[in-house]
Figure (cartoon, rainbow, N blue to C red):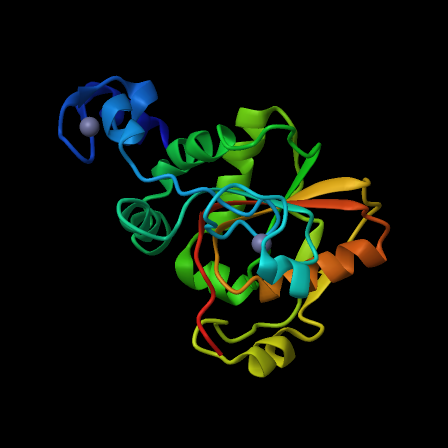
Length: 229
Ligand SMILES: [Zn+2]
Ligand SMILES: [Zn+2]
């Protein structure tokens, strides 16, 4: 965040994004009572999807388990998180990153010692102006007081957006799209803003496991159910 922008932000009265009550800086983006009233469905601790009650592994995970160990998220991709993430990702409101990281940090019990942002190809990075996963992971690492490693995973090939592709196309779209650099610790966490199908994450998990990583967590702001194939 630029110094000038921080100064402007400090000078402006902050408002809760939901009820418009005045806030202090630490509460942004919404006040405690609005936050307490947002829906928090129980989830499967493995895939992170909503379940009737909290469980270690849902039926879907027992049939085809994701290659990560545990997923922590704040919400489904629904109001008001969808609006917030849209502003963060597509409207360049990168100053929302500390608030998003703070919301996510409260969901994580025993943080991985190293956070790896899901890599973006340089062309997309260049078009968008910033890599949202990098920014989010950097702030999250600060909140959790762990290491942030933005250069370990690399996207070597520009891939089409995964959204809208069927399962087979998603897999071939990602074949050999990523590479890894350096010696890996046994426990890491992958960080992204939204997890939908999990295909990209599974591909990264395969790569990390091949490099000796034993335990992989996933930290994301929103976890949405995958579309039906
Ligand atoms: Zn409020
Ligand atoms: Zn599950």
